[in-house]
Image (tube, rainbow, N blue to C red; front, side, top):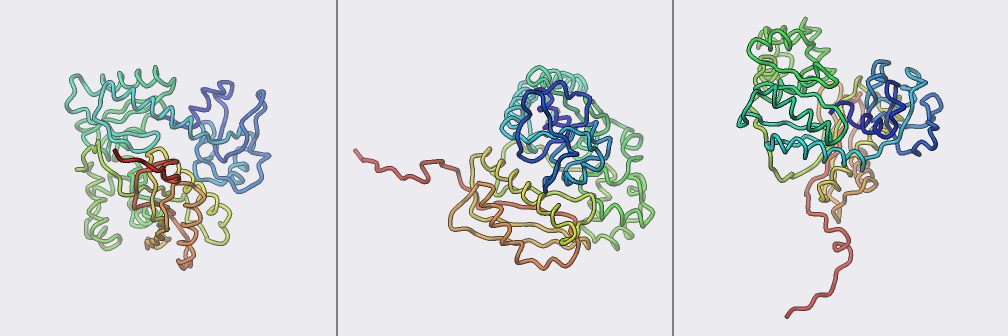
Length: 363
């Protein structure tokens, strides 16, 4: 879905179309057309998403609102409304399923679809899907089509917004290889910088890189994956049904963040991850007894910590408290490039019945 949260908000506030708008925090909704502006914001909030007009000014998700205010002071600021986003998420997925039911759910605004068993060309199916989504939601989506999930993910970004991109024979070299290596999902900012230091800027250069050079700098497993990814190889199937053993939210930062100097920004991102994870748990009607964190430092070292609670939880405050305790068990002596929060040992959320046992009678 194209700028999903922001697009949902523009359905409610059509007068904001064409203007820079950011979504973030949980403030008050506009009243009588009176909007809040970034230039007036004071606090620790983090941008959840932004319209394309705001992105053109340098604003992006996970950016602190105070920094965003320096780049786009006249941008309108709207609070997040997850119930509305979940509603439109359900609508768009249901619309797709009427045409192509073999779907892998990848979150609130993204899915993978297996078209191989359907009649008609992939491009024609994509046009039907886009029309169905538009009719059901009033929103636009962009579709990337290829032989696998990795290349389709890249392709879906190439002609946004409202695009259809087909990567057929010869198109990998023509459309994918000229792109920067950072366009491959899984190659983050730090790996990009390291590749650039080796003279590898584009996906084509990564595809042609000596495997021993990559292995010496990234290790065998990651080097092997990068070579496959650069050649458009991805054997992962579209998974339509699975019982999750855990749920997580994580984000890779645009730049490595200093634990003390960027504490305000990190605190806001940390809180937002917990809030969004809690939303995921409640949407799937589960709760979990183990809360954990994942940190990736500037040197690519990954550290995880877990805490098992006496009772399963699915609310943001409880997750935040438990994850905070996990953080206290980590020596934060290097800059961070990734932060994640997860909940495992999942069980069905029985709602009020879980908290209030009822005396039953046997007959």
